[in-house]
Length: 174
Image (tube, rainbow, N blue to C red; front, side, top):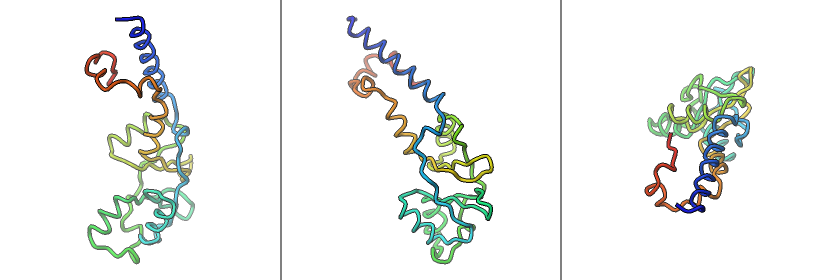
C-alpha cells in the first residue's frame, strides 16, 4: 500500500467518524422542516388534497380547536382510504380517513431517532410538535436524505464503485 492509500484510508475513516457523530449528535432542528399544513377534522379530503398540491407537501396535520395535533392525513391515505374504497373527496371529512394520534417528534430529538422511526415504522412524513403538542413543522424522508447527502464529503462521494468490493474493511455498514 502506498502513502497515498494510507492517507486516503485515514481521510475516509475520519469522514465516517464525523458522519457517525453527526447522526448521533445532531438534532431534528438541523433538518429543513417544512411549515405544516394544519386543518380541522371537519375539513374535507378535497380541501386537504388542494392544500397539499398548493404547498407541494405529502400530508396535512389535523388539529383540534386548541391547535393540538390529533391526526395526520397523507398521500398514502388518499390512495388507501379514499380513492381505493371509492369515497367522495368533496364530502368525506378528514376525521373519517386520518390516522389518529400519530407519533410526533420534537425539534430537540436526535436525527438518528427520526431515521429509526421512519425506517422501523415506515413513516415518510413525521410531525414536529412543541411541548403542548402543537405542530411546528413536518419532517420527511427527503429532508433526512438531503441532510445525509450534505454530510458525505467529496472523498466518500467520489470513491470508485469497486472500492467497496476490493476493500470491504474500509466500509462501515454497522
